[in-house]
Image: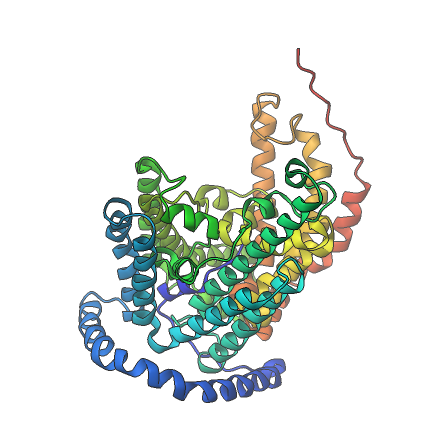
Length: 529
């Protein structure tokens, strides 16, 4: 669902296009606020980080810069990729050499902080600061079963993250270079999840005191669902566990997000991959290298800046709507490839270390035949986080409000550019009122077994026809909904809508009416012999 910002460091561009038109006042106000906060904190953070920067970072980065220049790669890309590949021997070290327990916690903290300080140097202190404040909150708050307990952590994390996003916008407006906000995004989700885990543990304990264990597990009349119960923590994690979880080195720069219980199982040698899943790892490495090749060939031709040029091009204005949508689909496709590179490498290293985790499903994502599959297969770990800690916490996930608020939180997590909000709100409304209605109304006319397209109960021809049609329609709709996420600015996003004659917006209500009028075909129940 979401794009992890650190992966964007693979794009060497650093455009800083100035805000114009309707965004001038909006951008200026945010920049002033961010600069005031940045000015207050800079002397303190630079003083602490200066020894590390002078005595280790600058000499080392100077040598790495020479190497990256000799092979024609930007230094930020080179450093980022260096750590992704270093994760492989590190994963074997975790699996084969380091004993379970305290030693693994210590290695996670030390190596993870080394990765962060080397990549972001003193700016890593932002992540440490908010993590420490949140841990103090977890320890000192008396009644951990109160809803305010995790809510404060949520507000704390997202407020600080918003300030970090403001700083990024003030120093690199519309830029895609590597900075500490990517780390901050990941740390924010992790500190919130830990607080919710402790809250769920306290709430579960309270329920158990009022009913038997089985009734509590079955969630009789409570607001806890299966994921809340499964991921709960019945105690406060120790500082070493907490910071080891936050800064475990393999996923610290690029993700994925994982649960505290998964991390503790990993450290204690519980519920791990018994054997290294060689085929999965080779498949991930193949997809990563394939996308790296695509990025090297087309990354500078089909990026954000090129998309902006295209939608403003006088010549392109005369293209047919089909050509405009197809070209936009190509731009969005090649924006994705840099994320595939990082995520597949990170997931492979985690699998080698023993973790059972999936970052994304490349083929399911690229062959998605409905809007829901795009969000659930894009960044699986963040999608799950939003599901467990936002969607199911609002009306127990049974209301359109849950869907809308989940997308709003996703937008806020990614940043403050208007394009994020235009995209996610439009996507949420399309998914809720068009996507699900189309799925319910149209699918039964093609398939007897609506749960599985290629079920034996469905004819092969109808399954193939439905898959091709649904894939084609989904890609067209997504190519209209997704560009503001890449374009970021309000002016450019509105220009894209003008460029496509607002066709998606004008079709929304008529399409909803037509789908509503289609008779609902009931699925025939299958009786087993």
